[in-house]
Length: 69
Ligand SMILES: [Zn+2]
Image 1: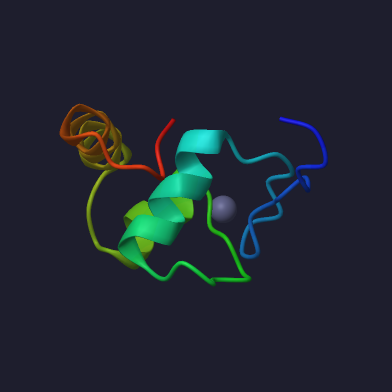
Image 2: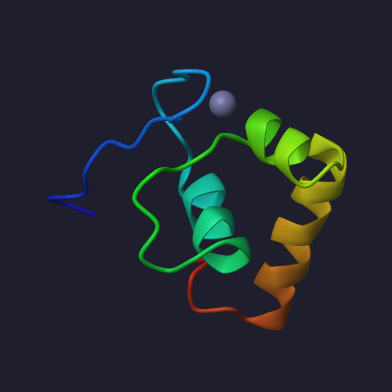
């Protein structure tokens, strides 16, 4: 995908979020979210585990969510 902005975590300064992490931010928080979180920070935010979030990503993909390509 050309022209895509490099997005980093706003909290721990992890520099490069994956497409899946970005999609999960949009899905779980807000489509227009400007401050993205990495999986580690999202797990803390939602009081869950990274594993659980990864499962959610897989689940959303299977569901055919357009945010996850
Ligand atoms: Zn982070």
